[in-house]
Length: 370
Ligand code: NAD
Ligand code: IPM
Ligand code: MN
Image 1 (cartoon, rainbow, N blue to C red):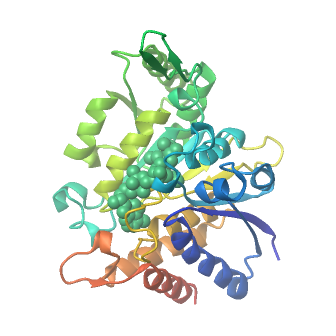
Image 2: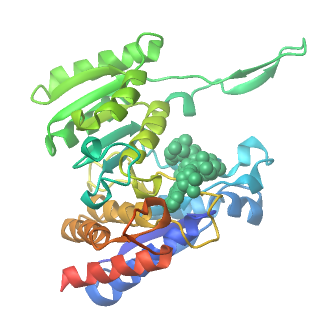
């Protein structure tokens, strides 16, 4: 039996509620499909801060570095609003991304046929939508130095964040976008703000050079990121792969989420570079949404983003492509059958809670495997 080491970091708020549904899938795949998942659990975010004063412990960081893949729920919440910036819940996630060198964040936004009318946009705008945002995840303004608040001594303070990108960082994320485009509609749109940012000028240059040198067969376009946000809402089906920096990618992926009906639908994969010897890569899989404090504890969160993140894990970390396809089909079939959590509820559909949605997907996945 294969051994596949997974670290589960459920986190805060709805994180553990969504993760519970993935645990059911893991248990079922171990029992019925000899999947060989070995799971460990750890703490991240506010719950880790409560336990030991840090957003992630050194022990759990070491477990993450040793795992074949990390499954991550969500972190944060108003309970930790007052904690020092360095140990706030989100710092745990940022440390995982940085230390595991997860530079490539894939955020697919797919509008399942059954949800075309759940989006706040007209059905014809989102029907059949299948785009992929490739977000740079270990650079840019998230990590650039200096990053501080300084006292100017005249009753004024100055908050400073620094946007920094080096050539190699842009080259490698562009490479990921071009490679993935070749497996899809062969189109990449690069988004930056070269009209106001030096890093945007460099981004544009390096993406253009990388395209010319290695991927001339892929169709490349460029868009200013603000216009890109507008175009995502106006006519999102014009895009195939979007490649952009850390901050623009964060914002544009929340916009893209709403094209699919709900933030509760969007999965993501954060990948490191493949090891030249073994081909394996560090990876973390997480929904795009946060801890949703407004609905946490009620058992009504949509678990699909978390379950679809697990499908990405099967595909990218374990090469279990058939299982990943089957799990995604199970999600689509369950939505077709009319089951909906509250966030994607529509007239005539049947409203279910988190566990019922999870159970229905597990059942469908099992039936599709038979
Ligand atoms: P959020 O994503 O937690 O919630 C935004 C809205 O979407 C809320 O109304 C919420 O109820 C809804 N929503 C999100 N996921 C849902 C789901 N699965 N099912 C149904 N509804 C869902 O964003 P926020 O409120 O801006 O942030 C809350 C906290 O989460 C903050 O502390 C933030 O820093 C953190 N956060 C964490 C992550 C992460 O852990 N990866 C991502 C984003 C935000
Ligand atoms: C996301 C989140 C994170 C980010 C936060 C929680 C650090 O918003 O993954 O989209 O800004 O990257
Ligand atoms: Mn975000």
